[in-house]
Amino acid sequence: MPENKVKKYFSLIEAWAWCDICTEMVNIRVDKDEIKAGLKMGIYTKEHKHINPYPDPEDVDDISGQEHTIYIYIDDNYDITGVRSFFGDSPSMSEVGGPSIKPGGEVRIPIVIKEVQPMSVQLGMISMDEYKLLKVCDGMNSVEQCAEIMQEPVDMIEDMLDKLRKKGLVKVIRRTSE
Ligand SMILES: [Zn+2]
Image (cartoon, rainbow, N blue to C red):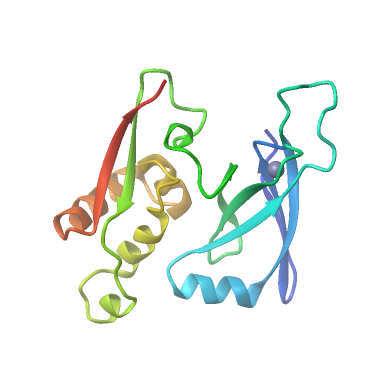
């Protein structure tokens, strides 16, 4: 699969992100101001609904001509740190974890159980990194994918999740992949 790419301009970025459903690069433009505003809330995610204009007419399993969504996680350097493609409102549990999970392998999916306000960071109740991690625990990412999006080692994410779990803010769902 080709690598995601970003071209950075003065006030916007142009991104090419790999869509697993289209099996094509999807091209979008995003204002830097929009990204900066999103990052203040912890993390920026671009949600982009689209259809594949050229689905394979020979392939009956190619349903990329139906509307679907691509989620692109973008960091403070305007680089893409994660991409998810799915039909409907969110990926089904069985899709979380990505193709790297072996059949019978265990996927751990952290999910926020209590919303916290940005104020919690100012009050010192949680760190900025923990706040950011909560935003990534959107049910679409395994622990490993959270680490990828946060650009931090998995160990560090595990430690942070432990703290957040003790504070009653997240739970980690375990699923065995089919
Ligand atoms: Zn697509």
